[in-house]
Length: 489
Image 1 (cartoon, rainbow, N blue to C red):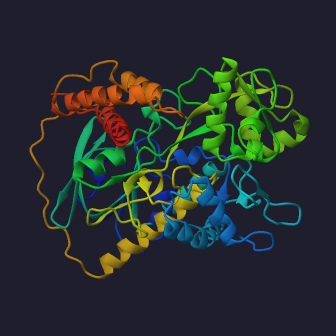
Image 2: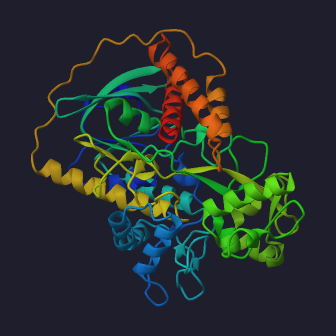
């Protein structure tokens, strides 16, 4: 929808259209007026790229809530919030069942039973999936459901440039195709996803620039554990900035991890071998690369055969084929790269931030669920649970007849200025890649923080034109600075 067609005031604005934002929208009553904003096209999000599936205990035949909790805590190195983990594991299965009602098609066997896969860190097969494109299936089906809701207005290609607190609500400045517009809301849910573009190499799409974290931070919300960053051990080792992910499920289904000598090596580092948690495998690869003096690593799943691989991993099979690798015949070149943020905007068990009426869900939030390392396939589950919790809590507040927003003041805004200097985003990525990748470089962290502080001050205080590029650069500089500030102690 065009900016000119939007209302001035909504009950709720949801910033982001990944699983957290979409599922939240579906959990509001029909009389709540909602505006959902997508920075690019509504299907473009980290959620859409999730391959593995959704981890949840749907049967107690060979699994239990306690086992899922234990696996989550072990992966997170016991830095998790136990209450949040318990809520996730106990409430999540009903949300997964609800997604089936919206048409999400999880893989089933010939008898109609759900097929569950295994991934690193899990002690049981509990991950339901749609081939190797689970996130896309979830987003596609949830988008269809949201599009049918008469109380939800969707605006694509719309960036929130700034956000301000006003009495009993928020004022958001929107940018769409060069046009600007202010909108107001009583409550806001930030569901803006991750920060991947702060790194030189990431599995995240171009929209992942940490905008929601920057908006929350600039308003004074608490940012927690933002240095808890996950590097996925098996991204396709190619030349592109956005790396093609080779799902954890490939190792879960039996792939071997090989070093530059084409030898398995995980037994040197962890008794769980290829199925150790992601942080352990990533660190092991870096240590092995230093031991051998090269960055050549591979996944080998050739022995499973072409028919099985095409059926189980059609997306990965086709994606690798585009890169000249036939996974039924060739080794898959892999190397760690940035993948996921466990920290972010601090929230409680109802997705409330430390600011009244502001909520956050999904990857931009810090629920405490993941601790220092996310257990595979807990991310989509977290997005579902906390998207719903946000909707339920906001609805309670609306029903309690809290004072509605009455301040519709639009400030005088000069959006003109110099273009963003070339090279700023590149420098930010290089600083982060050098100082805080898998095994941090303590010497580079302090210098990197000082340089990022200077870049951020320049962006804040300089007279630059308000464009998408400028706003994203400011978000990246803010996030990068907060990460290095947290670890530079």
